[in-house]
Length: 139
Image 1: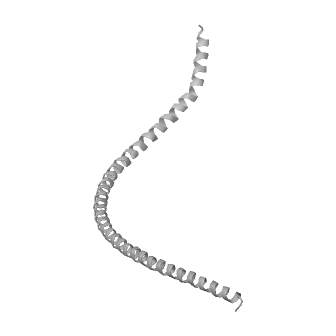
Image 2: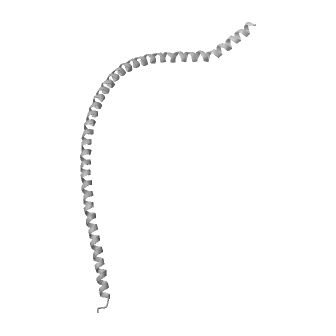
Image 3: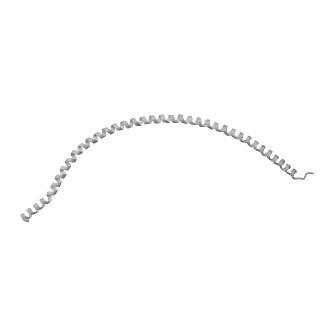
């Protein structure tokens, strides 16, 4: 191969490599920026780890307090359940008494109605007899 051809090839290759070299320079510059930002991110992550540890402690404290509150609520609920059961038993007794009194009153009322019906039937028989007497000619 001729030296002029080699030189021409070298010149073409160098021209073609110029944009690649330029892009490579840009990539190196951006990589430097990324590295410096990465250092900042590492510092932020370290700070976040410290803060997360503090938050974990706070959550543990809150959990402990919530457990105590839950235990208090459970005791209150048990006491209220006892009170409600006593009230329900009292109401049940009152309802039983009311039911018994109502049944007795209905029995009494039923006897009275039966007596009134009987009296009414007898009265109707007498009224019918009187009507028949009036209709018969008097002798």
